[in-house]
Length: 130
Image (cartoon, rainbow, N blue to C red; front, side):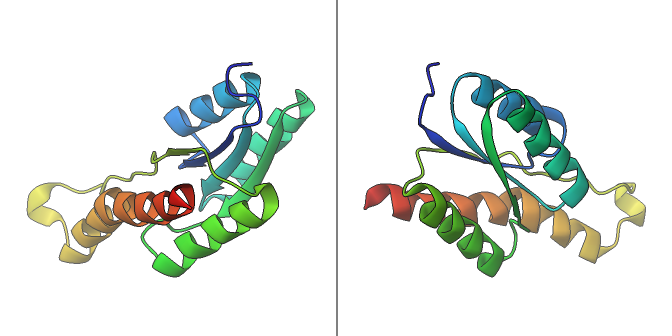
């Protein structure tokens, strides 16, 4: 139980590396905040964690949206009183070849994969600093 009583926000928690990280953190005693846009998959993850006597909650968030990120951080702070860990895992790829990719697709990739890391990191760091 190396993470007992630690509060961990994991973005992109609904599948892949984020899901595995969330399950592992929960097994190690963390209070997991599963942050994702995918309601069903994230809620299934939370249900799986709680069925194994872990602690988890779901925050629907678009990491590229400053208002969503602020809400996620405030809700977590209100629920747990602190944030100890941020796993900036959310990421997407554009399913298009470079020569056919629309600028809007590319911008969305940059917004989620780069801007999202900045927004989440900054918002959580501000809480950790206090």
